[in-house]
Length: 170
Image 1 (cartoon, rainbow, N blue to C red):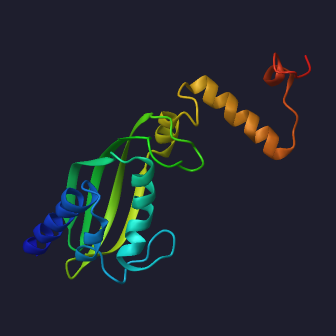
Image 2: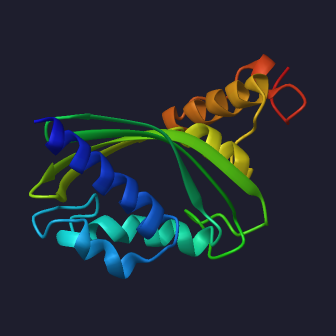
C-alpha cells in the first residue's frame, strides 16, 4: 500500500511541475482519466483543463507552489499557493489591470490506475477578488458593501446611518 501512496504523490507532483506550472495542458491526458467530470460538466482531461485554461488566459504567468502533499490510499491532498498577474483576458468580467494576485487553497484528488478520477478544490476566493480590486480589502469597507448589497437584493432602503453622505435620508 505504501507504494501506491508514493506513486500517487509522485503523479500529482508531476501534474503540478510538468503540466500546470508549464501550462502544458496537452499533457493532461497522461494524468487525468477519461472518467473525470469537470466542474463545468465536461468529461476527461478537457474537463480538468477548462477552468485552468480560463485562469491562465487571464493570468498568463500563473504558478502553483505546492506547499504540502498528503496521500492515503487512492487520495492525495495538495495545499498550494498560487500567484500571477492579471495581464490577459478579463476574469469574471473584471478587465485586466496588471494587478498581482495570490491565493491559498487545497485540492483533494482521487486517483485510479495512476490517473485523476475526481478533484475537489477549496480556495480563498475573497482574497483573490480583493487582490483583483473587485472587493475592498479593509473589513469596514467590505462590511458596508455587503450590507448595501443585501439591502438592494432585499428591496430594503438603506437606513439613515447606511445612507448618510450617500444621498440617503438623515
